[in-house]
Length: 206
Image (cartoon, rainbow, N blue to C red; front, top):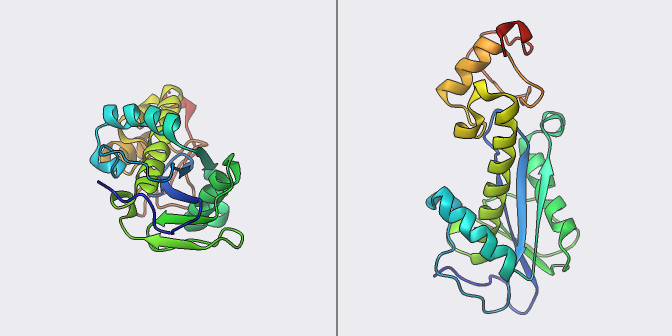
């Protein structure tokens, strides 16, 4: 069973992000406040769960949470401020959207930009240690996966339904063949080598 709280006696929000290492698509983050003393033996790091289990747990989290919200930062914003700052901004947007104001924040990882004046803690592998961070990881992952599946319908040749925008061989080969889309992060090394990138080519038959 993961731990319920890090800070004692305060309203605590757990935060995590999804999509930081992707070549395409927005980065998503979630913030979750769980009830005091909440228990759920099924909550865990989203990467350790099946897609079906993540989606099942999303409904449970949304039902049981005191408050939850998702924040999004677009590819254009990522290119302007870099992915680290974009991840922090997505978390801040999620925290801004909470219907209950947190008094402290716990974050998966080892870096975070302070949110107003609230106390915070960064916890390496926190999504496998604290329930609220695990819940946030599940929401961020499932909402981003849904978003990438919608983009897949628009650009199926990149297999975003399968790779969710991560740098798989298929994804990079599609970039070489068809060029880039408006959803690609142009500040990234999209090809993984020195080949030039082309704009999205309608003449490629897509």
